[in-house]
Image (cartoon, rainbow, N blue to C red; front, side, top):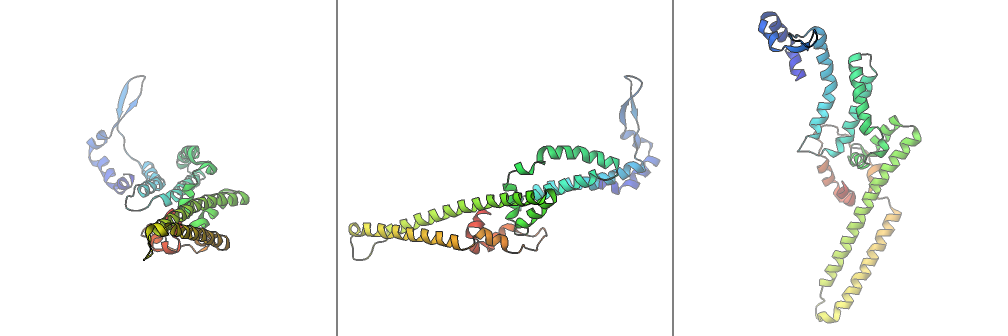
Length: 268
């Protein structure tokens, strides 16, 4: 509304000059002389138009964040932390400026922001994990941003805590996948019937073979996990995607890359 009004500054000024009824249509009430209420005509001078331009620029960051979170045709969870930090940085920048108008407004906003978001330690760490699972940022962005907020060791500790949450998620999904695969293999083995044999004669042999294969696959899984990097490590070591436009489809990226990130893609 402010942006649209600013474009018509000249029109409003002409109305003040040529239409005596215009100021009366936008009159406001003011208390004067005790309890008597008088209607006061209100117009816009150059100072107030400049305030509109200042407010429009400052409030746009909140408008953009609201529009971003209100989207229905794309993923929004991975952008939450980025938008939150943009608001944080904008408030801090305006708080340090010389303009009394913006500094006072930013001071009130800063107080309310810190009431809800000041303690980054106590934030839900899944907010960070969502950003890490964005292949354009991964851990590198969190490490960079934590480095601007905390001293070196604190920043490192925060990054490690976020990675630990991601690893825990990965391990949980990995165990579920191994369990479901083993159960499927056992069920398939029980359904097999060698030709020329009676079902009652070979059932114990099939069960024993299935159990032996399950044990072997588990051994292979443990061996591979102890001697090779996990999907999480490989994902974090790879370069970030250098695509920062609104057309980037994060779900499509994970679908294309799911064959080499079978478990992590399910987490994402």
